[in-house]
Length: 439
Image 1 (tube, helix red, strand yellow):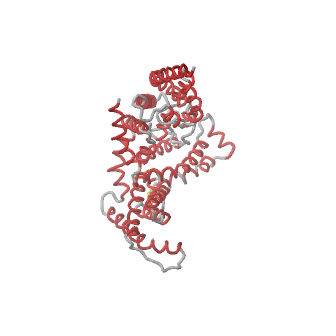
Image 2: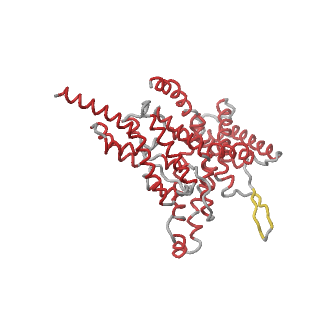
Image 3: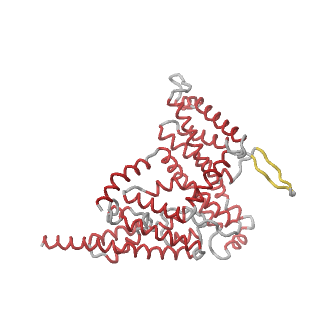
């Protein structure tokens, strides 16, 4: 066990800290986090449109007319369906902030660059004839979730070019006395021109290839293989949960690190699920970010069952009080009281159930959904603090999601119990010995 702890402290911890602090990954993570409230807002209207209750659609039509269904989904259109524009702006802004340069200008350049490399045409069918329409920014498609990888790439490249010119002093310098806002605007002129020219050349270069646009190239070469091999299968799901749990073993928020890397691959999967529901088709994908939300019952490590065990079974006063204090946070998926109070962090014994529990229910949940015993995630995004059971129902839109989370609690509790019992026995004996000394 000492060797395990040495490995965690001396090898894994420094690497994980360095990874978590990597400038570009941090910008991607923070950019998505800053946009998350808008996705939740869009999800609320999706729930209103497709609330999982018999006769709901008919009731909407009866009360508000046949056009209400498409009217109420408009907030989803302006959040999910043009998500890439928001993400390129947010990531460019966060990356520019880390360089301490004009983040607003970098954000606007990111948007302009993304639109510059993205198709601005669409096709419509009239009387069985397909017509091409020019100068159109579409809702959905490459401007939605399908364009996320290019949005991230463009945000990073445009900001790096912008930063290079600023740091090298290749800017227009205004005389003293000019208002700072005017000075900043003119200092962005030469770097901005360089960014736009570069992106224009990128567009021109890809127009000479069979792909036509960088989006199609990235999707076929990177996104599709990564989605198939890592993001949308059982092995990838188990690896994701293992990595997040392992990072928590050394006190790092594994979800913030791993989710930031994989979220661009998950979002199109949940968008595909939403699109299928809108068309009345079966939900195609199991793995979305909400699939993992159902795993983290009580927070990363699925520690809510630990809280119940401490309250109901612990003999140690310290552990029983810890359980009581951790109940309210645990019900809202906040795991820090257990992680640092038990403790679990840097505890080679407790890292076994911390990893084994979530991995086990990941396999169970995936197989249950693959066999259509449990409904699959609809793609609706909920606040991560949504209490378990309720969370399972809303994520899947079906009562089987709630039952599955209840089963998960029992499974994880069974895995944790031998380790809790062992630690509780030791702590109880220490308390008894201390009580005898005090007497």
